[in-house]
Length: 202
Length: 218
Image (cartoon, rainbow over all chains, first blue to last red; front, side, top):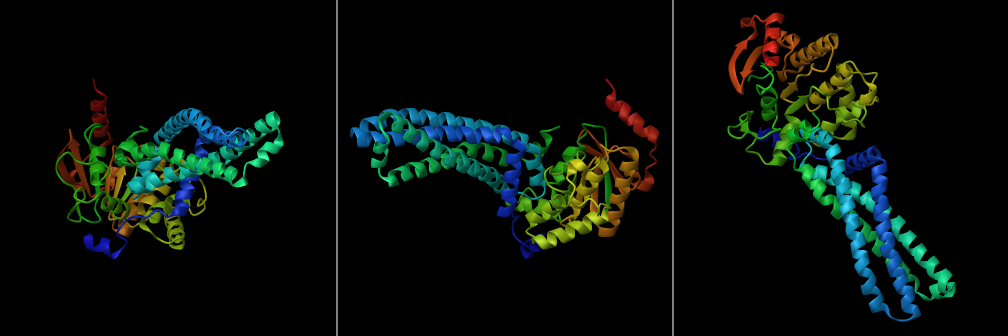
């Protein structure tokens, strides 16, 4: 057997187009739950970007950057942790629903790696969607709040690249958050023996 | 087990038929002992190599079909070839050939939910054949099908086996499947009690019923 194996490819493959397809189909199947996960990422990132936008504007206003930031970042950390737990929970539920298909895929030659990649790719998509939405929402709300309260001209005093930095930070945080929350569920399900995965439904 | 043979595994439920198939297929690890395929212990391999064995050497057919619900028939049949690294063109070509072989040439783009049980099992058989495996493992392939559909599936399996020279190992309760076997293995409490040629077996429906009655006993 060794010979026939070395003549052909040494391992099984799962190209990125297929990964994309499986991730998207999985998200479609989950429907509302996917949207809620993206929404929770969006909310916590919006909160984070809102806080940093506020800090930037306040800094221009009174120059108390340091104290403002430490105070609010504590709240932000809690928001991110809540979101992390939410993502992990959704992902655990979603992989449990997928046990049978994962079992089938492994029977047909999928490696642990392939299964992990499908779920991490899904997390990437959710992170990007939630991140873009959250960052823009946070920025918008921050600007509008201050614009209404203390005047619009103050907002323009904050350099544009600082706003851009907040948005990028928000997006990166969202993706990291989503990936981190999905890591354990993805590995958990990928390491199942194919038969345990298949048996699950019966 | 000899190449090209059709072996049925029989025994009361709980006797270990499915477990035996899963061990042969490398789906479940044995607590002790070894499984040899082409003289190689598949549990001595790394998990990556074992994935390759599952992919190329073994085809699975399940009682519950286990098709991927969001893939069309042709994509389901293509999936093992995706893992094997075949090009898209080769995959689609071979998958439509196989679906034609199982008589589903007009159902290529149907999703499993749009197919009947018998049709789904045909797709599953085509999928099992995709990488021309040396062994096909079938776990009660007719268990979820009505009598005539089951018979068609049995005949299909038998025909494909003779055409492709693939070994078929089939766990079953089904008299139809036993009829076409070369050899029959009797399993009781996880031990193979005897293996005999089909000619030596005179099994009637009454015997099977008796066996089923025993199972349902107290």
